[in-house]
Length: 402
Image (cartoon, rainbow, N blue to C red):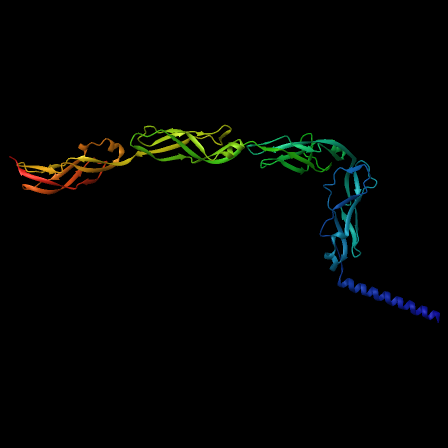
């Protein structure tokens, strides 16, 4: 009985095994394995470096290409995060030599075939540390009108650590400041740059602390402002003339100077422009009158034009009318014997006007002996206007000559 059970169990096991093999062959035929490189490369990680040693540089390590085998339908679902490439530096000593690259995966459906490179060249050096002074360099100074005091830095010395060959080249660390747009005290925590004797930046070392505190006092020494120009005109034009217009070019200027004084200026006056006894326009070039501690941003002269024109006025004159066009055999008298004439125009002409310069006439052409009412006609200098004659008509008595 026991022998029969054993025979049946062996037959069952053989049948299952054959079924599994047949299933595997069928699946393999439907979904064959794919052998290819991963679409992406792996970065190399270094580990187990002994205390007191440091890699001269981990930059420039090549990326690792990995060749795998996996079912075709799974190839593009393989995650790069399930792989790692590493170099074990547990037995490293100072110097340069080749170290093997180890590639591993946690994905059970992937079989690693090969990778490239299989080893890398690394340089191991003693870890060195030294203290280096911090230097502040101002690349661009504060704007004109402001002053930057000496920068303050804390700490003044930082520790530089890293490969011995790099640390030995470093003579100072620098912080470069650009203050071109700063008008207030500059305060910032900045990253200093380690530099070699020739001034070149040195990479691959560590600074402690990584940032330094910088303070630069900045004070305003001069203020700017655009203010209007007010012309200063002195003197009195010639009698009968007046100032009718004043213009200045430019109308405003930019000033710079002591902040309190500049802020207090609402305008800037020009040097005096003298129009004494002027009888026409005056154009003069003058300078701005500025208080101590203030100057023009750009030196320039100012052009002031003063327009001078005659005053206008009027006056009344008593003028005796004259009879014209009277027949030679007649004589005539006029009543009233004088009339009032209102004359207006430029004052210089009015002031020089005499009664003889204004002619009032009564036309007696064709008049017979007797008394006639005749309209008056007025004539005067072309620069003047006769506004009114009072009265406008007079009595002209015409009689034969005896």
